[in-house]
Length: 269
Image (cartoon, rainbow, N blue to C red; front, side, top):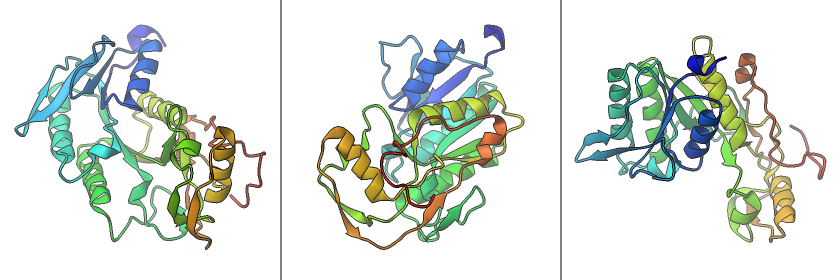
């Protein structure tokens, strides 16, 4: 594929995930614009997009681009204007002749009950405010012909599990199953969908296909970091597993393990 054939991409939310996505797309020859509420002058592709008095302000210019919404989860609160920003961004994308709109959502939209959840899995019936916002966001995007990636818990550079749980008292069970994915696998999944937009289905889960217990998972990462193990509130088995193989039909493959699987017993997957 020549540089001329590479897609143009607008990334909303050039934070921990979105900024790295912008950098890698640019390195591959794509034209990129990535937004923050204030521009980051370190990057020539940095643009402004923010909601001021319920009106969207922006400095975007890319026409006929694919749009990726990677606005961080902390912005997905009822009082964050996330949904209003998303709605007006979708309208702006249409005005700028966008080729497609991709939303980074969360596998947290699924039921918290034990079970195996693919893209048709049961959604949470008693949802938190954040999950209700996520589900409303998905509906906004899907109603306009966009696509949704439901991401499992993210790990990667500067998000090392062995650091952020060190010595903490966790409310979960030590025998609950982990649903996580490395940032690089997410970036590769996004790229796969953009490159095969017409063939791609409307919703994909993105989650590494190994599901160790929380105790095994955190023991490995705490050993790697030399930090104290967290404690857990319970020991009951919670076999809640996100199934995320459908996206491999696009030629995508998971290449970045969430931990070294041979270092400690995995248990069942």
